[in-house]
Amino acid sequence: MSYINLSENLVPLTISKLMQMKLEGQKITSLTAYDASFAALFDRVGIEIILVGDSLGNVIQGHTSTIPVTIRDMAYHTECVARSVRRAFIIGDLPFASYTSVAQAVQSSTALMQAGAQMVKMEGGSHLQEMIKVLTDHGIPVCGHLGLTPQSVNTLGGFKVQGKTADAAKKILEDALALEAAGAQLLVLEAIPSSLGAQITEALTIPTIGIGAGPDCSGQVLVMHDALGAFPGRKPKFVKDFLATTGTIEKAIALYIEEVKKGAFPAPEHCFISN
Ligand code: KIV
Image (cartoon, rainbow, N blue to C red):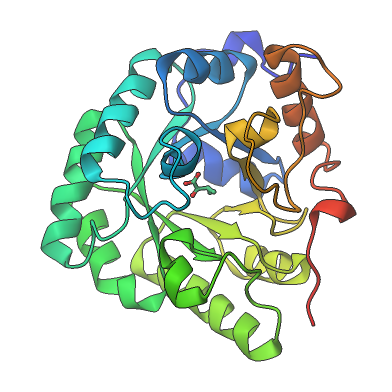
């Protein structure tokens, strides 16, 4: 089970390559990682995007949400990951309240880029347009994040599936188009109906990376602890434990890559439907 073409193995992935993969209908694989050892393993097995997610608040720090995570935490873990990755594209997550103004977003993003990220991710819709334009104008590529945005858990009233009604779906689609128009080059879609994931992926030029957003996104991402059955907390519907049937971490990641590439993951039992 090897998905890496060894001759291409050490050619670092770029946003242009990820864009080309979308155009060619090749699925993009992504996992979170927070340290050098797991990042090196995921990179070696062939994961294309490593997201240093603020989910580290849950899976590393033991919090019940991502809200306590600081930019210092994110920069530290981004540095750990970046030291060991040779091929994968690294995204650093801007944590809660680290981009409440354009100036603060530039400062926070600079910290992640200087720690080794090649792109920063931010949660939210059209209100981020000006910020995204300024960041991209200054050489800081941006990944958006729509649907269930965990940093807004208190305004959303819990970790709930988003975009289930026609109006809510329309708003997420409009936000996606606004983020792309502002210059975002990648978009994470979390916990939305599969039909909406497909519609947004079709409407955008940039790749979409789904987590609970159906099989038609340009790629898939999972929190590494979920993909390895290692998180003791509540298990969302979109999660699959790839270690359960494989026995080693390398084989589990290779199976994840294989299933995403051939469209077998996510399966219907990992997906949401509209109202
Ligand atoms: O922080 C994170 O791990 C994320 C993923 C859930 C996409 O944002």
